[in-house]
Image 1 (cartoon, rainbow over the protein chains, first blue to last red):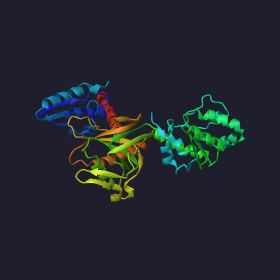
Image 2 (image 1 turned 45 degrees about the horizontal axis):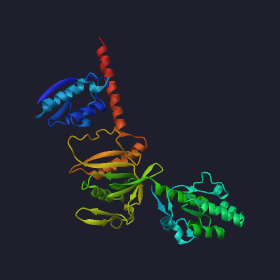
Image 3 (image 1 turned 90 degrees about the horizontal axis):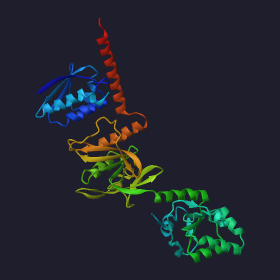
Image 4 (image 1 turned 120 degrees about the vertical axis):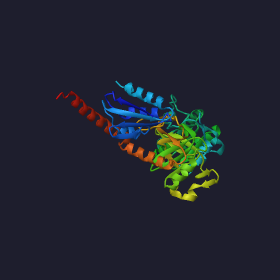
Length: 88
Length: 321
């Protein structure tokens, strides 16, 4: 299992488009994927879950991946967050 | 180029347009190749420039009256001139009768004259509709057309994916079948209109059972003859890496005969109730037509929430106290 903490760096926060990008990226992998914000933990492969986290600009998220390809999953998702989802 | 044989046209519309043939049956051999009608007033008076002779020529009260005023020899010359063009046929309205000479000439030169008891206006309207449909761009699509709460849904997908079974389930839930397996689509007033390719009734094949008659089994309310096609739903086997629509903000569309309609790619896998999903697609379409888009409303709420939270966070950081 891998855990990684990231900060939302795109000013619009995790709205519908980024949420879709995360879910689409995550569902390519076999590992389980969870997102934790404060005391809310959701399944990172569920679009409603990711959107209802309502992770705004500057907030902290913990990414948790568990499975055979967990490293690749975390890497791709972290890159997505760092690239600001192609915004700005 | 499509062509409608005058004989077929006469057989087909004899009753609807109250038509009778006043020339010999041999005159029915021409083809109609143009969906428009023409009133040959100017041609009758001797002006043949831009005479649209390849259309059905409609003779109303004015034209017939005019012909009756012509002297015999003049009438003969004029009509001979007109009949020398490749005219598909003439239709006289209001049940009026033409001078015997005209009919004699038409027989000689083998151009059919039909007499309709309808008024010119009514004939124009009815015949125009019929010809428009006949000459409209059309194609046949492999699929099933159902009317769901008034929304026409064309269900497509590979053979054996379950289109017919899905249609049966929808019929059982009170929806209406237009046609199964092959859908004939024509463009009418910029709208796609779907119907069956035959007029045998509403038969369909159910794998393992054979042919069934939906109208006999479920009743007249379970079927309809034609329906506007609003959405295409493509059933496809579930694939892991397929990019399915997740939120509904995308606008996938497909072009059929030059008309764009939305298309939904629906993954099918055991345990998924496709009929309910198709009903939801129809209801969601109705909501969207009335101006409510669930995907837009939700994402707007989310965006507002994100903005407000970001503002509060920003204020807390700036506050040096």
